[in-house]
Length: 520
Ligand code: IFM
Image 1 (cartoon, rainbow, N blue to C red):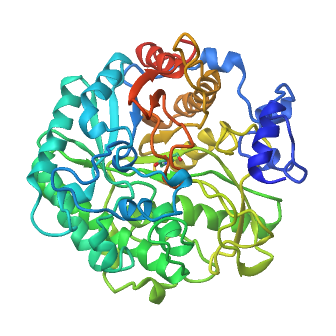
Image 2 (cartoon, protein in one colour; image 1 turned 180 degrees about the horizontal axis):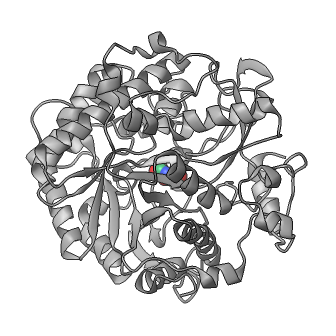
């Protein structure tokens, strides 16, 4: 049975399916309270009493997140240049249903309505991203004033609503002109990107204080250049290594450019992260799991905090293939003011049996791994990575594993000297739509966030300095290669009319933000 069919059947069975071979996970999980108690009918689930007991600090920043290409539309308006995702979505056969982001949620024109929703739901933080091609249509050179003006108005509207603007500079939409120059494997992009960051900080840095250079850098470099499932669909592990190194340099250079232009700026991150658990207690699987953690969770964090690549490879980092030059450690090393990361679902890792690269197989969302065989995901880390299905699955096929939130937050807290942490994204795909009365009763989304947040509250109680949580997403939107077939919003969007309907989850999340409790 493929994963998608498995999603359907596991939903019908309330997620109670337990796959053979994964039962050893509970004992290898740092926290195994519930697995050992046997009190839960659904693996990994959090009890109602834990949800009732969860508390958040008075000044906790409840927020929602979005990304420019996924919500803005207006793809060629006010001087905006073409981006890689414009080109990709305009190419026949690339996106499910032939969808594009040309209109998306039309947030470029409807941002006031969307900020009003945030305000109505007592939100304290809005994480949005800026389209590089609106600011520099060809990726370099002077700024497009209309693009600057748009984001300036957006920031002002967010602030007027009493909400903190959190800006991601790059959420995957690269000016196509830079892709045409070789894209991220071209080291020159680090300097172009720093120039772009400096322009933003100069024009918005009097009001914006929270900046994250890159959204999920591993994902867009690996998917875009390593395995070719995102634009520009190039495939080569060397290309991935080069792209990732350019991004690490760009992160360091942008950090300095932002700080030079704005004395108020704090710079952090919006990394994708997933706690990884060894498939067995063998030394080989434990070592492979550590390599996964280094590659997927720390590859862009450790370079910033310590100026060096974490131990992601069997053997020395492949410096020559990366295009690493003497002195790059100093460029990469920048002490992030806070660490932001997303958590959606976990991984189970084993040492690869075969050294073949498995490459993409079947469906690829923004989190999915190849599923076939036991071969290595790539030639140098020699890891085999699985997406477990022990817990229930969302309608995107991602396993719900709330304990991972606790494990990840406490792990990063331990490894980086208890930094300030923001959860920059977490969310789930369910396709609930308005009922006859116009309500969207998406109880499963409420339950999902309640459980993950209960685990976040536990990490805070145990000493982690987490100051924010951003639900993905403010509105249903363009879900990359899946087009409009997946809905992550706390607000329903009718894409024919652009009518917004706050889902029950959004109303619930508003009460959470007002009370700092999950049983609101
Ligand atoms: O929609 C994406 C987002 O762009 C990045 N993080 C995961 C989300 C859901 O797949």
